[in-house]
Amino acid sequence: MPIEEDDRPRKKITHEIGQDLSLLSVEELTERIALLNAEIDRLNEAMTKKRASKDAANSIFKS
Image 1 (cartoon, rainbow, N blue to C red):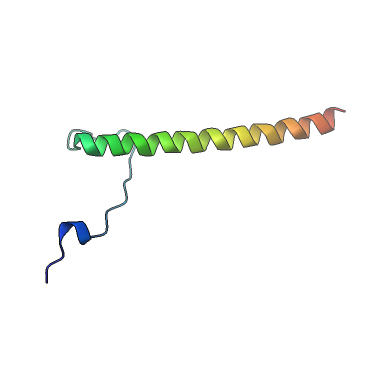
Image 2: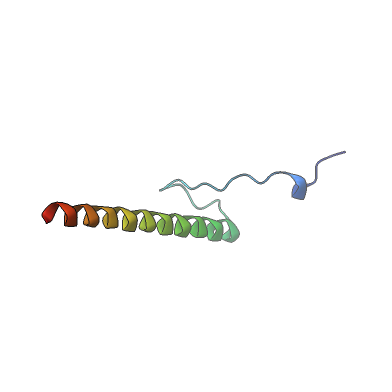
C-alpha cells in the first residue's frame, strides 16, 4: 500500500541565511517568516534574561 502524501512525516522547516528564495512558494515563504520571527522572539528573550543577570551582578558588585 503506497504512502499517501498526508501520511508522510513533514520535513522540518529550516532556513539558511542568504539562500535562493526563487524556488520557494508563497506558503513556504510564509512558514519561513514565522520560523524566523519565532527565533527573533527567542533571541530577544535570551538577551533580556542575560541583561537582567548582568544588571543584578553589577548592582551587587558596585555597592
